[in-house]
Structures are given as C-alpha cells and as structure tokens.
Image (cartoon, rainbow, N blue to C red; front, side):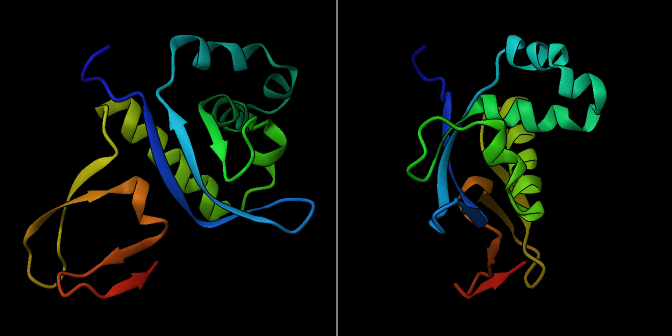
Length: 134
C-alpha cells in the first residue's frame, strides 16, 4: 500500500488518566475498515444504547494511547469529553479525507493555512506563533 497513510499520531487536548494517575496524551489512530464499523453493531452494549457505538468504534481504531498498547472500551469510557470529541473529529477527518490536515482561515489575517488536526491537541497557533488554548 505504497503512498497510503494508514496510521496517524495525535495528541489529546487533556489526556487519559489511568488508575495509577499516569497521564496519557499521545497516541495513534489507524484508518477504519468496514468491519470496524459493522462489528460494534453486534455488541449488546450498543444494542442497549446506540450512543455507545462511538466508544466501541474508537477502541478498535485507536491502537496506542501513551504507554497503553491495547486500547479497550474502558479507556475510551474514561476519557474527558473534550478528548472524546477530539477523537471523533479526527476519526471523521482521516476516514473521509485520508489525511489529518484541513484548510482553515486565520481569524486575524484571513490567510488560508494548512492545519494538522492530529497535532493540535486542543490548541491553535496564530500566524505570529502564539498558541491559544481552546
């Protein structure tokens, strides 16, 4: 699969805090397969609550979260809502467009800039290089 990027590194805006109090912010998400979207529909948790679909789906495609190499629904359930929303946006971006980059317009100078969603981690940089938290 030459030329096709299938894994994308990311940094969570807040991060997952494990049972030992360790913070995990950097991770990897892979492109989803058709089975990744079909299999969760068979899960009884999804049948009881359709909103749980995103938890199962993200647990399948997030391949690493900090030092955690086997991401499970437990980790996804324990994310802060900002991190869950971030992963949902990243999932849509990479699976619909094959890239984690989007074109955005600078609110200060109106210039079009290429922004890598995976590296934002919840912050935006202005053209002067200043970082602003969202």
